[in-house]
Amino acid sequence: MKGKKGSVEIDIPLATKSNNQPGSGKEFAYDHGFSCKAWLQSVLEFCKEDSNRVIFALKVGLAVLLVSLLILFRAPYEIFGTNIIWSILTVAIMFEYTVGATFNRGFNRALGSLLAGILAIMAGQLAFCAGQVAEPFIIGISIFLVGTTTSLLKLWPSLVPYEYGFRVILFTFCLIIVSGYRMGSPIRTAMNRLYSIAIGGFVAVIVNVLVHPIWAGEQLHKELVKSFNSVADSLEECVKKYLEDDGSDHPEFSKTVMDEFPDEPAYRKCRATLNSSAKLDSLAISAKWEPPHGRFRHFFYPWSEYVKVGAVLRYCAYEVMALHGVLHSEIQAPYNLRIAFRSEIQDVASQAAELMRSLGKDISTMKRTLKTSLLKRVHSSAEKLQGAIDLHSYLLTSHINTPERPSISKPLNLKPDESSGEQNSGPAVQQPETYHEMMRKQSRRLYSWPSREVDAFEEEGALNMDFSPRMNALESTASLSLVTFTSLLIEFVARLDHLVEAVEELSKMARFKSEAL
Image (tube, rainbow, N blue to C red; front, top):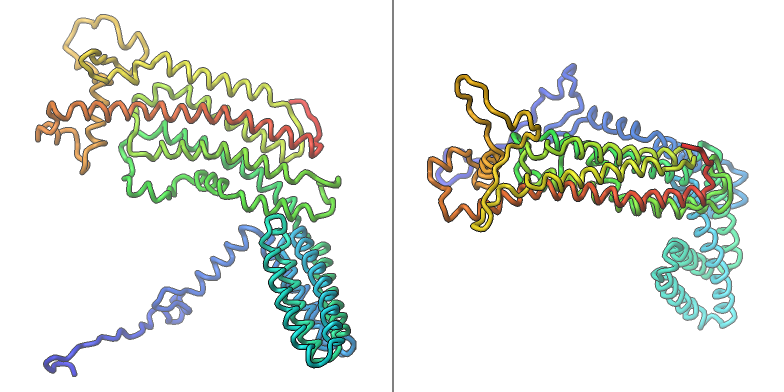
């Protein structure tokens, strides 16, 4: 129809063969972007991140194979018959990543199957004694009652951890009583299926415990230690960037709200720490089901204390995230003002990070050391920072112009030999730009929309008398940004007291070995 009046031309692109030519390295690449090589590389990277994932997959395959042998060989199949399929289903459903989770799931599975079998036998016998006419009605009513009761109980707050057990009760009861009604022997059907479930559960537990066990307690222990190091690294990273950023390459606000900073790897780890609450809770619940093992050899190990320490640690991580918020905010303190307090800010950050890593090391090595000296050093650094802010507060307010209070223009350099003294005779030297002038120019650049250089204001005459009060307010806010940053840093130090107390309580209850610092 091409060339005719009113026709529509439809171009269908032909598949190119360049990507699939032999030797091109893209034999399995297609036009829509799928690449088999890239997919294999992503799988390998995923496995390298945690080798336990591969071990877990192999263990599941081994457990399913062992149970399937009961069907593949004739002798076991003749004993159990088709009911042996329940063993395979039990392994597939019950086998979890950690040993504790497998025990937890197995307990729910065993208890639910047992209760379902008892209820099914009672309901079946009652229906059988009622006669053929009333039997289907009684079975139907019993299914309705069991389904309603289990669905209501699994929503009860204190019974939420056993939600899987109630689900097992429901579907096991329904399958046993319905199949028993058709086969005519509910007791025999229930017993055969309970045997099959027990075999599957036994195989799952044995394989998970004996073949390279993955303990939930060990995972919880490592996760908490990693969180300590992540918060410490993120704190140092944030302070370092805040003191090094001169504002020359400040990101736009539309990019900062994306919350993606590829040049800050520790920031992403700290953000993951804030989202670790559910993971720590799940690992702690699973760890309670595990027998004494490895370094955790005594009964009733205080796994719940790990969750409490993690909660206090997140309480500190919130302050680090707030510091990152100041770092990436649109309103920034001038670079010259930030470096005036560089030594005090760096000292607080380094001392606090050292204390955080020391606490994480104590948990990692399960040793109890006194943190009094480290904590005193951190508080001393915070007091020095607070004293520096109070002593040089004129730097934060010198730019404010009011009729009652004239502006005070002081050089930022605090060294007296460079900012005072008579000038030697010689050619005239241009005086350094005052702090007030530098801040005013930077504020013009930061708060203009769209962004313009300082000269643009002077050429266009944009900075008139009506705009001066607003400009002064913006400059004041920019200086107070430094106060916000230092206040958050001092608040982080204050929260470390609660973290030290939480770790100390954990070390007592977990019986960490005492060691002098």
